Image (cartoon, rainbow, N blue to C red; front, side, top):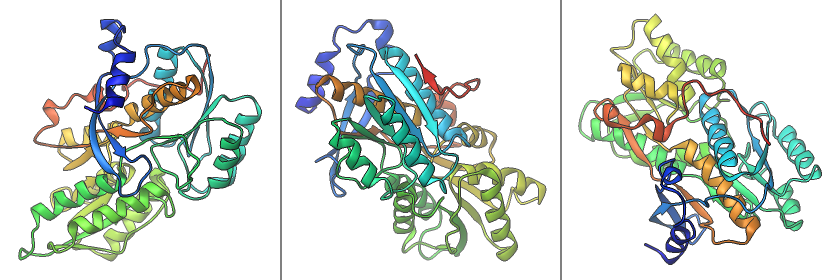
Length: 353
């Protein structure tokens, strides 16, 4: 265990057993050196602060709240803000086409007195100028989930979506190795230009290379259900012999009903490259084969803890994310749902006072 991790553990040694039973310590991976594209992944046990020194005002910006994934991140940031005793104001831009709106919302947040900003970025490069301006004001910026290329971010709470895509591709490659009958796969990586999408696409394509998996032209699109449903319909019509639909969680969720309607559930397999409640339920019911779990709730919690640590000048793991593992029909019964997903009855929270 690294020195920094020991410091983190020591800083919370007085936490009550009730708090410790809440969500931590959580198995995670830190990137060394932080922010390096070729950094090494090292295992850590993540332990947050017991409580913030004062009620800091933290602004959180999401691309949208149109699917259960971001609802899960919302649950994470809101619950950790409550647990640590800080204020939270959350804004959402409405979709991956709304970069200008996200920028404007963040500017308004900063102008209203935010002490730190947590950003789930619409664009990998598109917020760099804004992040630079915020950092120049000595306001910490935490990159959560999606990834940004800005050198001015203070910390990152995210997993490698390249690894997520690679895990999904490796699952298919293992089922259909070189020399076996070729299978066609419809691939739906998400909105073009988003950092997490490009990373997942890279990992997926690398993993299936040299196998019997033939990936059709990637179909990019917003992660709204209607947009993904149209893309899947197009592939089913253009390629009747497609054997798998693989892509975002929304793709897999939307495709379940479509495949049932067309009597294709036994002939077309479904895979997602990240986990949501709908994907979890789909795996449990036997409609979706598998998906890596990236514990989006914990990513949200860690981002808030990083913000507080930076504001208080305390030790912080600057680049960290939950340990990824694949959930499939073989292990879903032994997978703790509460550790990776929000409660089923959770409703969006936009402010914590």
